[in-house]
Length: 373
Figure 1 (cartoon, rainbow, N blue to C red):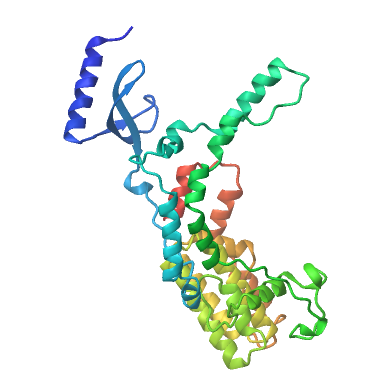
Figure 2: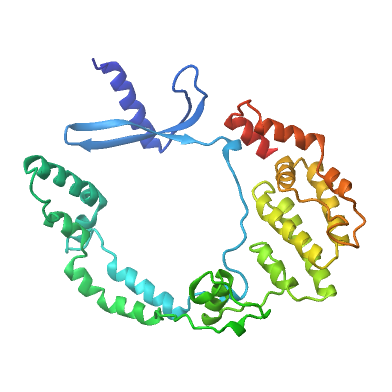
């Protein structure tokens, strides 16, 4: 049974907040054992077929510690940014197309009401309901064609299509599509003299296909530094066929990038990228019999990671067994096999691994706190 007094109170409060353009900030709990949630109540007044509706919309609000602010590298940088920046002609063409397709409530063509989301039904649900109804009445017949009313809501009005035809042709002209044919390559096109793999189309590896596509599109594949977007690929390109001076320079750039990703951004998020970079640095150092710089860096990396309590980063390194380069791998190394094995042992990391692999269940809040700290 409705409470008239409560209805009057809610109505008065909703009207007062609506007039003052204010909302209510309050604490919400589903039941007495639920965690409290911060919410806002905004007044909502509207007319419905069955009478006036006066009430509130509830919106969940985040606490300060619920906010997550991440810093991401730019999608386009340097030459790529200039290459893909639209010019004035392209901007004008797209702007004209938007103007021609924009409908206004003041127009007399009726498109505004016809295209209003409140008046457009979901075509998927309409098709589903019509099919269920037809199958219930005609179980042995094939389903009918799509209802013309539903089809009309999915089709651009003819007058609107005619009105925007010139603008659409202009967009097609300034944004010309070109079909890129993948060229055929012979075996002697591979730089290192090895025969191409049978993987990929036309006997090219996936990496060669990427390079070929980039060359056809006119993209500059020259790598001059190790960046934060694709550091592994940059480092690999710089050290392939490089002399000792260039290799040491690339190692230092990779070390600086790893520090930026771990300490300037969120180290826990970028842990996998940094560890892949360190793993490739180790492989290249072993191949060149140049372990000194890498071993010194890995010792520093371990000390800094544990000092800053980046336990997840260190535990992943231990799981991947990325350790110092030992004498059996590089003759110029002064690290023994036992020292390399001992490098990965630390009491704190062992405790973390035991917790993760143990039977004790870790709830979501504990995991979040571990990442935050």
